[in-house]
Length: 73
Image (cartoon, rainbow, N blue to C red; front, side):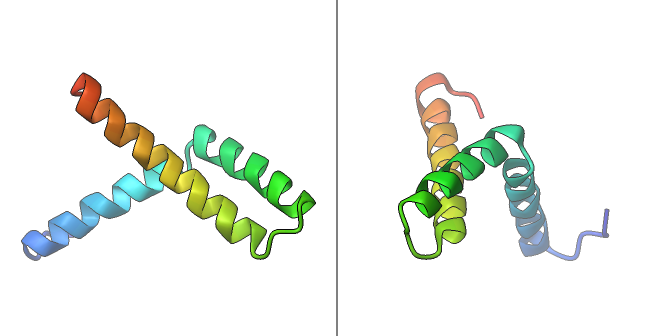
């Protein structure tokens, strides 16, 4: 771990860990792969990018709902 430079550094480090935990999770990778297959089959432009964006959004939206409803995160 790098030494803490300031509050902004700590905040950015937390974001980086949060994103990394999502994009390397089996849940994300599986959903992204499924969406890529569907989008490619249907000829959507930038299928891989759209699949990534929508899989990522889906997971953060679900986690946000869990935090709101169940008070977990």
